[in-house]
Length: 506
Image (cartoon, rainbow, N blue to C red; front, side):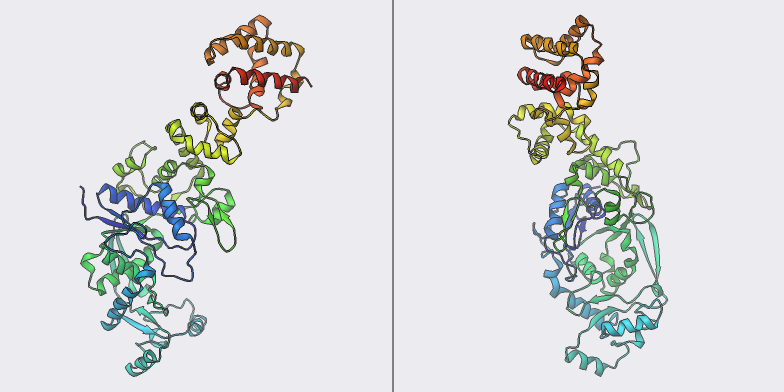
């Protein structure tokens, strides 16, 4: 049932390239919002200034735009809950952190990094929580006077959540059902850092509340943080407004062991980012699906099926169809294995599915990037229609179609010369004459004439068909030979036969 009050958010950090797991989180948020007639919010979580990377925010926006996932609200579209960058909301968070301190749910901690390091060396598996907080420098272990003195002196401090002892935190996850955490396993997370910036834990709760987020979809790796966030919703008095949670399954390595990482892509030669990402510091470029030759339709289709299934045999979905069919109930609890061969299959299917007109600009870009000049768009459309079923990636269009626009520069002579004879030279000389006089230049007639000549001269079709293909394209590839001849036209076909005969008889 449509509900215009549904509000979801995708909240990436601008710290580098956008992993396909992040894009899938955005996609599932988007699908749910659109299906429910709700609002899809983009919020930039840039509170960790030490990890902030110049250009990363624009890159995230570009990735979403390429995928067709358009935010209804966000830093670049605006909205009634602006600003949508957490760094621009800095003044908001301290008020809530101080409120938590005032109500006894949080406290000031003055420990230096050196003091915390010493404690970690002293205590194996140290957690800053109820077991050890009284041994450290904070407003629980210090007197009120000492705390006031340190605050007045401007001593650097953080604000930590005071996690209660011996309690259970329970919530219902839309994917996993009933989830329970014991608070003794949860440490006192930092909520406000010494520089006044909130951590993710405080900011995400405050912003979700202020932006009226109704459903929070995020990766399974955030599940351990759920008890912290639920306690914050409770302690801030907002429990009744807490969004419904859904923790999405991990995208796993191809062997199913562990979360898919950037290193896996480098190791096995497949992309894990939506688009190429260039590290501004190292200059290293991490490859993306777009530049490798994927269509956004195929990429989104592939991602949508990673961890979700429609309950039918249908595998090819447009973004609109995914919106119609999507349901939380059919998201798997277990992780989804990344299968690059399956991703390529989706791409090949989408190349077949899309019209030549839809593919024209992308294919033109592939060819022009390789230095192939396209002067005739009408010919390009016919070429795309002829070869698209042979292409898995957009980049395949170069090899599959370059010979329509450029005469071959070299030939697979090893496939021709050992069996070449003078009678074959005569055969193609006669073919030139026949084709030059042919009034009807279309594939069926061209093939009939070729076969007639074979019968007249006593050649088996196989004996002369391969040399003919190599004359036209340079090698043993390409679509049906007479489709190639029809598209090349009479003049160009005859030029290619003549040129190849020189090479074959040299």
